[in-house]
Length: 218
Image (cartoon, rainbow, N blue to C red; front, side, top):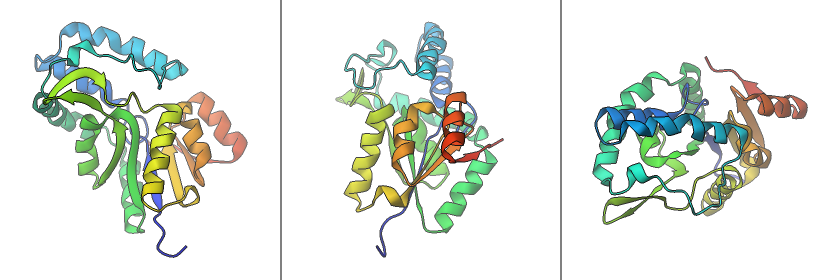
């Protein structure tokens, strides 16, 4: 259909940037005295669970005590302070591809499990106006320590992207998705152009078997 929106969705961690944005944010928060040093001890355990796919996207029990009571302003300040480190981790090939897609008239959207307040400075830097991400819950501008709608993982991430596309008059067949993780398999299977970027071992196997594009950003 003429004029129908065409979207390119990008994961962030290990896809646009080297490494993970969440730990960098926590480290910066510790450095600025906002979070206790003990916070860093939880990072390896959390990301091990993510890598093996054992995190429950539909659980309402997600709670982060170190964030409880923190003001939105303080957290956003940490995010802005952290951005210089984040910017240095952007893959040049990812930056170039995003520019090419925008020049071609495609709408580039971040679709990530990372926190929106962490990745929004990245989106702004790359000229990306639309972000689908995990959000913290705030009451009277103070973080409750919980996630507003739970984490955007697996099927939940797919559902959010689907709602986004439908609300804008798009179709799955006009969309591409770039990701490194097997956790995004349901979303990759839904779009017309699934692209495995720096894929983990399991995603690489699936991509090769199904003939999906595989990109290696360095």
